[in-house]
Length: 84
Image (cartoon, rainbow, N blue to C red; front, side, top):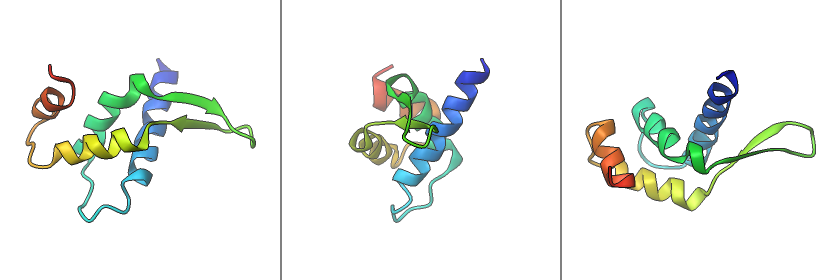
């Protein structure tokens, strides 16, 4: 349980860094939606400095973020991102 929470927090930080150059403010809701979508697709590895890092497909995250534009709820986002 604790491991999953840490992974999600690391992924949220990575997503914020990846999207830091976007022209729009990145809301917590957008980050939460992207974490929900990409957590299962993310690999966590130990780097050269013995720190755990999140490896995520940057282009997929950016594409997912672009799809968030105009979406009002997490349910709308999930429907468009994963077709639920």
